[in-house]
Image (tube, rainbow, N blue to C red; front, top):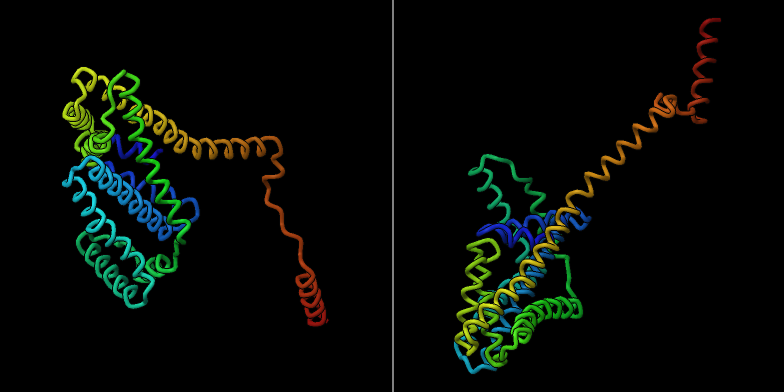
Length: 294
């Protein structure tokens, strides 16, 4: 929710900024940078493939050959290569090639930015860590089903908005109408696609046979639920996540200061009790000193 808020709040750079935030949050949870990057890549592949599948099926149901081709090409040209690339990392030859590419890219960026980005061994360890990760068929099916359910529920929200305003839902063209809004929002020309998504959805609804007055009201209701409500919840989560660590550190410092003021003796460092070996060594040193004195 927090990363979604960042993505929808910033124009053009919203998606990269959200990806960086999610990467840092995942890595901070203990998974490490390699696991965080792998998780983001897999979730992006599943989400894109689910969207392309819905568009392709919607084109088939509505008899729109162009939409079916667009959905199929998106899967073949965009999703399949990324998935195959992650699977091919498990082969040693491919893994070494990726390591060399990563080291070369790091060296080039170091020369261009004049800033040390990391050691070569870090790149090699990161690639090797990603190569050891596995996603079972059951887990992959669950991730894909979750992505598919996410898109379908968003499309159902549009259909419910039409029904709530006593409009006739164009069931055969509903997928394409919703896909027009989803495609317009993916460009991130404005924060959350404001203005662009509303215009695309209104034109698509009117083209599907919905009266213009009802189409405008449907778009306003749909965006209020699917965008503004989600943005409000995400902003609350983001503020809570950012505020909680600061509050925890403040409480820790307050407790420490209270303990210091209550018992100042505890602040004095105490010498550790000598161990048995230390006592034995001290006794031997005293005996040697006494013999030398005699």
